[in-house]
Length: 287
Image 1 (cartoon, rainbow, N blue to C red):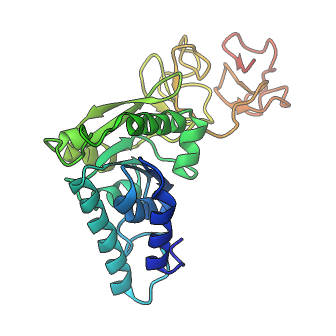
Image 2: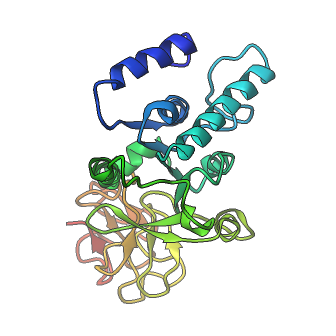
Image 3: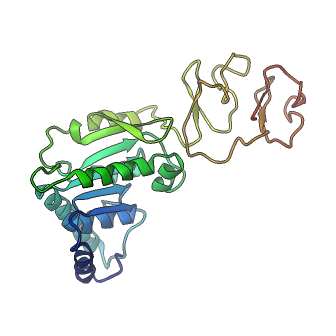
């Protein structure tokens, strides 16, 4: 979209949206930038996932003849966001705890609601949300809000009071979707970017005994060890971040003696030599 003539593209969007009483704009990454830039002018609700905002620092960005052109485009988007809030549109930004959070914070804070998802994605963020069962509930929530809006009772974003009401941390639910908890931006930044910060990645899991984070390739808690009862990936009380890679799969296993992880076709531990079946009572096998 950003390679097209901006004025003509904006005019076309207005014509497409004209027959509808309510308009929702969605976008991710540079599509999120587009949703904010154009949707800010025509939409009643805008939802952007990890949008690029500071184009001078963005890894993905539209072509620009010079830095001044990129800065001008970003400022146009900021003006569109402010204008949308002034007319009562609601603008929500979802971002992971990575560099896209800094992009979100570059947006006019008085005009947007930011939800931070506390993890570091290994793939496009919206795709990860979809795999984790979080994306569609967010979209459905936006559609439901859109259908409930009326011209006489607007759900305005500009009237919200306090930064905490506009800045939230998401908590993913086991059955899909998420809950949001208000938090001061400075505390969230310190949590994710401060000393000792190690946000989880998709597939990582938290030990049910000591609550420490473990990588997805580890069958046993690195702190508790393989001998601790229940301190393994397959324990029913272990909390695992959805959306990870396809490991472990059915038949993959962790040696109960030394903790080494193995694929299903490995019939003995390549570290200590014990057999997969019957080698150690603490061995765990994905069923």
